Length: 240
Length: 311
Ligand SMILES: Nc1ncnc2c1ncn2[C@@H]1O[C@H](COP(=O)(O)OP(=O)(O)O)[C@@H](O)[C@H]1O
Ligand SMILES: [Mg+2]
Image 1 (cartoon, each protein chain N blue to C red):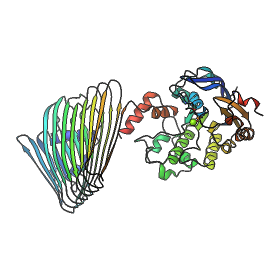
Image 2 (cartoon, rainbow over the protein chains, first blue to last red):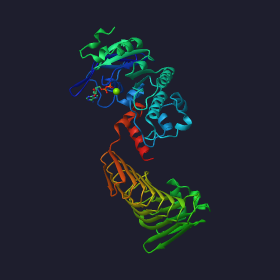
Image 3 (cartoon, rainbow over the protein chains, first blue to last red):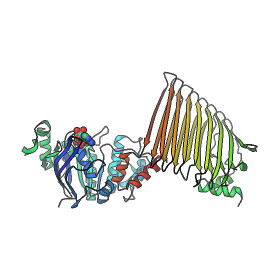
Image 4 (cartoon, chains in turn blue, yellow):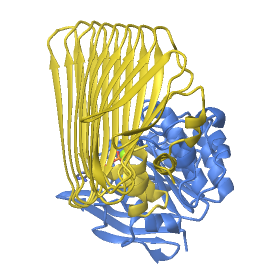
């Protein structure tokens, strides 16, 4: 059984069907890229897996390690080993980087995790995780904090997007560090070149997986824009 | 134990450094109620304190050009369960002087204590004063504290004031500070208060940017729980070209506590600019969810966030 097994997952907010019968499975220690253009439901899926408030499936199942996690709160899922880095990480007043990286049962020695995301511990450990950090610095610190957690499943929501985006090399370093930790990764992106660093990939369109398999195959399909450009229901059915 | 020993013990418990009283290079003033227990002047700093019919009257002068290495320590308290303490302070930093003040106001066993402070602070041209005041009101909520200050900051002067009351109960607190800054003057007022039980917190801080290119920041961080209440008014006036002011108020509200924030910004010169931001409510949901994703329970997460904003 896969580490994460999502079957026929649906999520509706008001009248909008944001996820519609989505299936996805991720093995332990697998890096899985989720490719999709804007507004296709990538973040929604991440919030459903992480258990964010207001995100309960309207249909389907999410199993983690064989257990249904649908009724668990965020921190209970975190304790099982699921964690997520937001696309736009929040700022905290009065919390230092050192404190942030050692919150709760994390590694007591935070410096190596900063190095893994390209930040000098000497310069950053005493900084605050507040508005004084640039967007890129804040994102790196978020990724470092996820590494320090050594989760079974790390969800990265578009680590390569935003004003101060991280380079593909930064992301490769983080993914490698996750692999060393034995963490599985759900790597959410809208750039096919990022998907190529994964072990497996899936393309999402209108709340469904329309193509999955090797990153090369999915990236090529995504790049061809056959699906994202089409307006036909079930556009992914002819996925090669 | 003498009153001084007792007060010093409470001072130590409240985070004060007891060794400073013995240090001949550090100016200080210590009073219990209306009794002056200890005072020291040092080169360049005059400390004059006397008990009057209505309370304590104290004067501190930092002489022209004197830049103090050690902070001036002020320790005021009431050791008894009941009592009052009325202090009138007159602080003057002469031209180009620089000094830090560390004040502790401690009422460790207070059940019914009134503490009033009327301060007049004059910062001369090019002078710089840092004033950090920490209160400890004990566990009973029996203190009524009314600190008032009128501060004038001369040309190129700086005043950085800080007020902290984050341990124990507040009781009733009514802060009223008014600061006026002249040309190139800089003012920063920061207040951090944590209220519990039926504590009542009223903070009014006003910064008048009277001189060209003067700068002001009023920053307030309040957390309240149980049935506590907080009413925070931050007023900034920009009355001269190049004046820049900002009011930044954040209040976290739990349980049945009630908070309000009233930022008032007024500009009388078109080349001045004053901005404000106020956020009141429960803990930010995204902050909470982020910490929960790191494995903290909702209660632990709220605790970390509240401690952070009060730090
Ligand atoms: N709570 C919500 N209620 C209604 N619509 C939503 C909600 N959250 C997201 N959406 C919409 O659902 C679609 C998918 O959103 P999202 O998952 O954030 O997309 P992505 O991350 O792929 O860019 C978007 O059109 C978005 O505007
Ligand atoms: Mg998104």
